[in-house]
Amino acid sequence: MRTQPEAEWKISNGTFVMYHLFPNIQFLIGEQTATLIRIYPKLGDPSSSVTRISFYYSPELMAYAQNRDAAAKELGDVYDPNNDRSGNVEGNLEVFKSTIEDEDYVMGEMQQRAAEDGTLSEIIFGRNEPALHHFHMSFNEILGEPPLERL
Image 1 (spheres, rainbow, N blue to C red):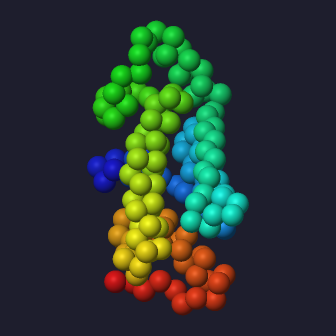
Image 2: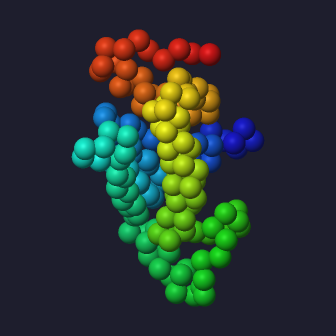
């Protein structure tokens, strides 16, 4: 972006905008998309939760995707940077599943088991995880706990 005029900068080229609505909602906003993620505790099991995800697309993006998909045979590799999966629900679900469900949730489950059996006494979030920092700092604040320690 440094080589482009500031008027042409797009935040989506370098990051994504995400809001955390305490206690259980994450809202991601793109130029023509929005993703709403809601996490609910599983009744009777405080170590489990259910996640509900909704993808929203602008009418222009949906029309573009429908025209593109009508001409295409298959989705292809959703991780190929040359593959245009804009507005493709199946592609977005695959990326979400492989990143969040297959990586983040699996790691979270392992950490939860380790915390419950006493193997793990603390978790350190990387600096590349500001959303996790914010999420946990919000809970610490409402529970009257000290803020997370910055390393």
